[in-house]
Structures are given as structure tokens and as C-alpha cells.
Length: 268
Image (cartoon, rainbow, N blue to C red; front, side):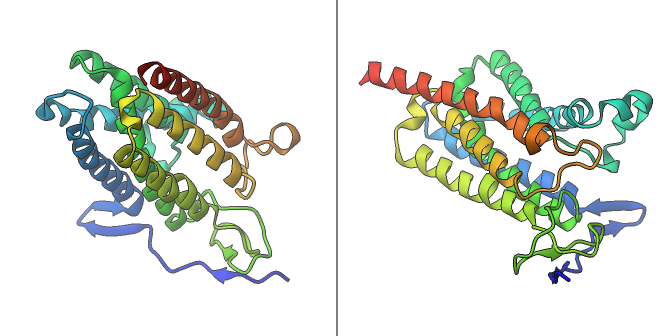
């Protein structure tokens, strides 16, 4: 019989104020958005983007709307289209769970593009700043997934396997923590170092390309340890939906890296 670490006794509810229930998952979103926004302001001051910082405060509203709407619609379309087709009202019940990073990413792309157009901001320069802070939200979001005992990994015999409350009696990979490490912490460190200590930010699309490629590769790797969604399972040859959705991100990221590097060579 495989043995593993017991799941830590963490209540998914952070605190309650009368009838109001505040969950760690909600706090993760709020913390990621606020911290990412503040770092965006710091990065914007470094250039080359030229934007009234008071207008930049509106970006938080655009990003929040893009994440919530895009993340929910992405989950509906990519992961449970049949269920939501027959239960359309469930689409609006986000407190029941179900958000997609890839959908949220597309939502932010759309909302930030609208923000850039309305404020006469170069879209790629803005995208580079947003890409640099995106791993912050990923980090806190994956920690919240772990606290909720959701999106856990496959059964394993490694010594750090965790027995999740709703994952059966066998230990599983804490894949949420793997994602927090690779997609969140490590990717953020790489992007912030490149942004602050190289001239990459002066070549539009380079930081964005690094984020897209780095996230796509990290997600594809961690998916090898993550349990597929039960209503979807594996696709062709044990490929998961997460891996399938990450492939376009990798190729688009490579395209932006090539484009930015080509521009760099012409400038230099």
C-alpha cells in the first residue's frame, strides 16, 4: 500500500463576516491582481512605454474583467461545453468553481488591447509589462488550488506524495505546487531579471514571447504529473487538454521572440 503525506488541515474559507464568506481562492485572485498592478506601475516608470500613470490605474479594472470573463468562458468552452449547454445558468455561478487560465489569458489580451487603443498606448509594450507580472497571479492561484484540494496530480510513490481529501486513499503528486513553482515563481524571476537587467523591454514583444514560451513549456511538463479532468480524460496518446492548449502558446511565443530579435538586430 502506498503511503503519503497527510493533507494539511487548511480551511478553504479564510474568514467569515456574518453571511459573507471569504475564500482563499478569492483572496488569491485579489492579491495577484493588486500586486501585479503595483509592479506594472513600477515597470511602466522605467520605460520605454509613455503613459500617464493615472490612466494606468484603469488597467486594473480592464485586467480584472478580462480574467474573470475570459477565465470563465474559457472553462465553459474548453472543458465543459456540453454541461453548460444544458445548464446555461451555471455559467454565471463562478462560486461553484471552474476557471481556465488559457481563457483568462485570452480575456486579458482582449481587454488590454481595448485599454491600449483607448489610451493610445503601444499594445506590444503594454503586453510585455503584463506578461512580466502574469506569473504572480499564477503563483497565488495554484496555491489556492492546493488549499481547495482541486486539480491534484496523478497517483505516485514519491515520498512527497499527498493524500488529498477528495482524491482517494492513495498519495498523489501535489501538481498545484509544481505549477506554482514553475509557472509562477521561477517564470516570474526569469522575466523580472530579463526586464530589469537587460534591454529586452526596448524590443517590443520579447518579454511577451518569453512568457508565452515559458508558460507553455512549464504547463506541458507539469501536465505529465497532473490528473486529467475526469469528464475529459486523456486525449490522443495521453495528451491532456492543458497540453493541447499550451502548444499554440509555445509557437506564438517563439514567433514574438523571433520578431523582437529581428527588430533588435536591425536597431543594433
